[in-house]
Length: 392
Image (tube, rainbow, N blue to C red; front, top):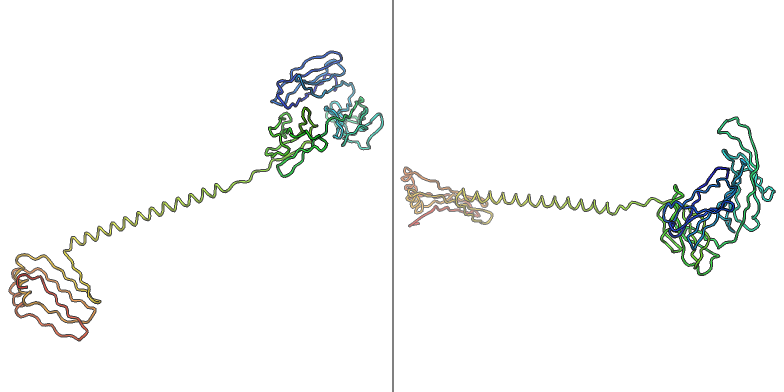
């Protein structure tokens, strides 16, 4: 670190972060630092050197202790930035060459004062750390302060040497996917007592939102996007943290079944309403027809219908007054004989009401009578007799 600078150090725990305390050792003086708890499993402290040349920071909860981070002050513009966490056997280690107030254009890395790469990027990565990678590392960079002036002169410089130690540590776990949203925690070198797992999740856009998941099985199903890691629980100890697996949440398919069921129910409801309406309408029409028929029967007198073979004879009996009785008697005595006609024909005789003046004519017609003409065979003769009393 440059003089007067500081860094945020993040503490990740498996239990409650409120039970942890952090410490700093500057030279021979030690101090307690109260961490700021972000959530149940995450806390942060601000680490600064003040006037010291170097300082070491760590945290404890009474029975457990975190790894230690050592910060060193430099007066140089070029700085070698090693990882804050210990370099573990078999894991990758990243070294960065930084320039105070700017960015390195080219960089060369050295181990024990010997160049270790021909590349000129400002980052050097050890993919699979071994004990042979332990040593003193430094970098040489060329740079310009282009943010001050586009024509700024090129400068160069060396960093201080930093010691890198590769330690064995516990075996490392590995996270891999078994399907599009199922993750499995492997540990090939773990002993047999490493049965359960701890799973951790970090949001893409918030590195401080680091939490331990409630699942303890080797395989979990994930739904939320983010960075996932695990480690195996081995009795009183743990494996190393696994690699970080990046998972992007997939959009959930739309379930169309409820929509289809709702549409079917709506259609059935409309059909039921239409059928009920039609049924009520038919009942209403039948009632109207029945009322009309009843009205016809009560207003036109009494009707008697007699069915014959392919023919019908209708007799209408009107209401007779006392004055019509004489005419009715005469008609009963003489009768009327209708003309014969062909089959399928009908003869209708209607007896109307006669006045007093028609009685003489009715009597003469009754005495003389009428004789109908004879027609062919196969024809029917219909005789209509009026209402009669007494002699009739």
